[in-house]
Image (cartoon, rainbow, N blue to C red):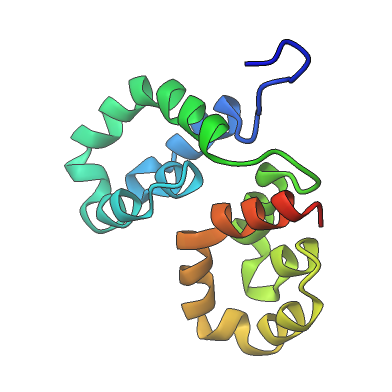
Length: 136
């Protein structure tokens, strides 16, 4: 690595641990770009609590993986995830991404009748990554 280049810090361990508290629903796994296991955690309550407990030790590694995998840039992953999680049906995460028309459509349709929200839980990291690579 070039000494003049700072490493990416796209995701936060603090945010990961906060989401881990709700991890039996898979939220921390979605946040760290693991939608398949996030869905499994959601459907099985964190692999019946066992996977959820093990994840407390895996969060630092998941955080480092995201820092390598995703591009740091103009949009903050943490802000996007908070907006999706709490205001996604109103399209706030879409407005944050500069996708005004999609934001209005989400606002008018309850996040495309929640199916758009589910899609965004699966793909938000990649959406932010793409915008950050372009520089907005």
